[in-house]
Amino acid sequence: MHATLSHAHLSLLSKRIELRRLFTTYGLVSIALSFVGAFGPIYLMRLGYSLTDILIFFFLTAVIKVIVLPFVFKAMHTIGSNRLMVIGIVFFIAHFILFATLSSQFWPLWILAFTKAIGNACYYGAYRVNFAVAHTKEKTGSQAAFAQSMILTLGIFAPLAGGLVSYFWSVSGVYLAAVILFIFAGIVIWNAPQEVINKIKFRNIPKGAALKDYLSNFSYSFSGLADLFVWPILISLIIPSYVGIGAIGTLFALLSIIVTIYVGKRIDSKIKKHRFLGYGVSVNFIYNVGRLFATTTPHLVGLGFLSALGGSLVAVSYDKRYFTNAAKKYWLEYLYAQEVANALPWIIYFPILIAASLYLTTSQLLYVGVLITIPFIFGTLLIRRSK
Image 1 (cartoon, rainbow, N blue to C red):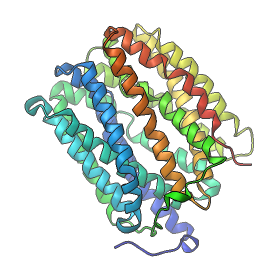
Image 2: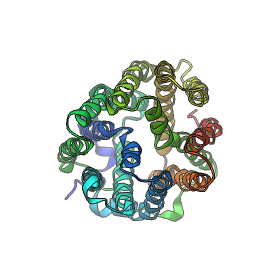
Image 3: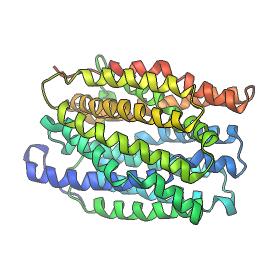
Image 4: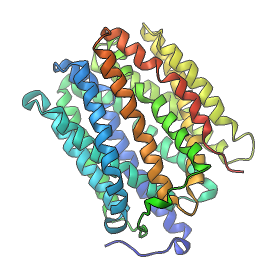
């Protein structure tokens, strides 16, 4: 049973407590995901799955998520957003256990897609609702930066640790270690007090000016899709060992935290705060073009710096606008539409690559996967800024 406090009577102290629990859970889940990091598609390939099989897995994940999202947002009122985050974590645990036993059981990939999709829809949908409710409006940027920097601080060595565990134990061991973190994350948020979420009314989904925000989120999601599939495999062609891949991931995180802390402090100030998103988009463009020419480890190190700089500038400043724009009358409907906008690029991107995989070599397919995301980097700029 969840608390029935109104938003107006939720004290600043209780907001801070709620945010700490929320960030702790978010941090533990993010660390667990960082443990496996880029291993997913590489692991599937090394188990003998074709590129087409893996692409279909990602496509099915997106389709199932879009189908499930309306039911997730309807359930916010009856189940509560904290409990939905835990349900999402339970499905993540199921997904990781399936991955951990995949080498011996060879589960159908649609089962893995199902658990991943439900986990993603419940966990991230409920997290964004929780953050929108609990955040202090004047400090959205610094609070988002705190979440981001805490995750990076705690998880800075997670990719390397995952690589070492896979080397001395197995990749299955990495997934099982991550399951333990998921369990702790669920415990933290399960009994946390929360507000009652009103019933969602899909007819009230904001339109008009909000369409720019949805298109921006669509573009933001599309521009990052290469990181899910293409880029991990390209890195594995340069650095074949899991330990090396994990070390590169740790380097990326180390560079990111420095930039994230700086941006978080500046984003709430009045000085040039609107320029950070543009700077980040420009750096991301250079980074993505550079990925097309990466062939050596020094190249990856240089790209890691660009990724850290551009990613941090975009993520923190984008979240500032995202949650500021969500703080309107139909905020729940707005967040639902944004979750759909975030998932739709998967349904477009992966079928394109599935079709291309029938005609292109592996190398050609991977570079096409990077290339087609580049134009969408600039669409991120469409998100409205507060006046």
